Length: 367
Image (cartoon, rainbow, N blue to C red; front, side, top):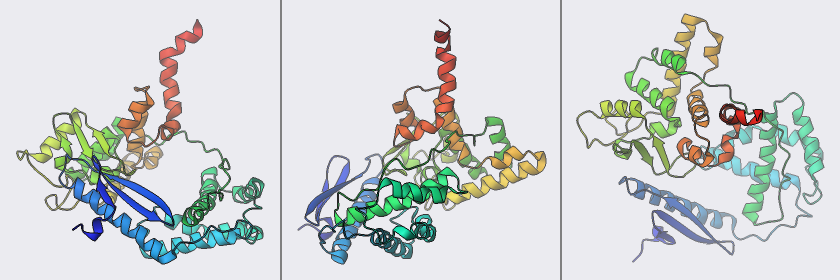
């Protein structure tokens, strides 16, 4: 007899697939795993079970509701329901809503700027109404901050439409202001090594070096395990990443040397690579950030170079991607190496790619 927890969950290739019927419609979601590690499959199954139970609780809590009439639905209704959802998520530490705390913190300003529209039917709201709201936010705020406020309106519409299955409820597109994405927060190898030399812990130094040479995210290095390392191909194969997709972290010879020294003679060593208790639990990602900040502060005290204070830890990833952009023209290969979900995420590095294109093909312009 099948376990009730596994009802509606099927194994399909290298993924667990959850199928559920909610509000008269069928839904499915995949939770991929890899056969390279023993823990990947049961961890993916746990995520599948948790997701299914969450969906079932949602059905029991809200029931099957008919689509709301857009003529009687007001902007206040949409915002209030999304705000209530965020407040509930706050009690759970925003486990299911990354960025929820930031969204909730913007509600006072959002409700104040849209005060004259709150009781208006969403069917009557046009793009022009939200352009007027955007102008209010645009007074004194950077474009990126204005877009964050507009994003809360968009998220509220999306949440309400998805919850009540109202396909016709859509937030106007194309309202975001243009943001200058030219990435300047990068560092060269000499500066990087100078900062790392000021970090006390050798194991933390090793983590920072992996971040610089691989362009991996903090969370990916924190959760990296010895059994995920492909010692032959020079890869760390992770079942999931920030995007919930499988992730391959490409290792150069310097990274391999670091990992081999950390592994020692035990070639079957298991557990988290960066851990203080024998691989049982990983370091928190903020451990690396604090170490970087301390090392940077020490170097600044010696040099008094103001530019050093601008180099944050995420600059290591930006530096890596910038280096790769100038060497790899194929965006699909570049996306695979950097771990971005979409090639659109690489658009901020166009200034770097333009330089290499000019160097390689500039002679054609002279012909």
